[in-house]
Image 1 (cartoon, rainbow, N blue to C red):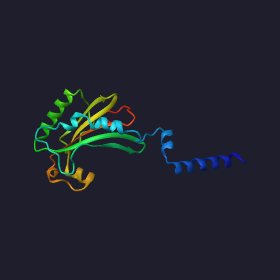
Image 2: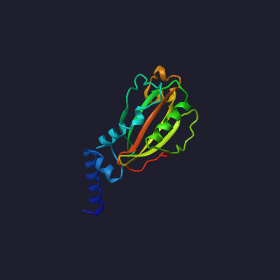
Image 3: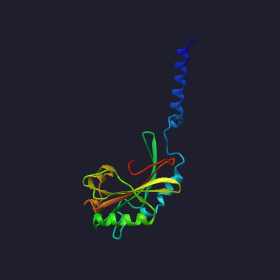
Image 4: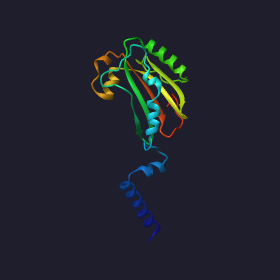
Length: 181
């Protein structure tokens, strides 16, 4: 059998096996990551104290109760995340002051967000190694437009743009991550 024919047959077998057996082996061979086995890292992020310590007067909007956490895959990159959404009738300056103080107390270091987002009065980022895993914590304003795009109907307590989200993110395999990612 000519080499070209053997190569074509081998390629056909490999592609068929990959299609039938899933893409995980191909994903791993290409250096991509997935969410398999990420449960422990998700729970590490879920337990970060700053997700549960909002400024006095902040409340959980309907439909956004508790910490949402999980692993997400996108274009061959997997990350673990945990976030919590709050409504707050105070000022953005109060939120910023609260999280800068609380983050410093818990050992988080301020990082540059590298962004200057118009109409985003709250835009903070901090870094810390959580159980040996580089982790970022962001605090950002939520607008009704952002919320509608993410999840549909906007709860009344967030309709005025008085909401913010606290989110912790880490690479699923513990790789480097910083505020510019």
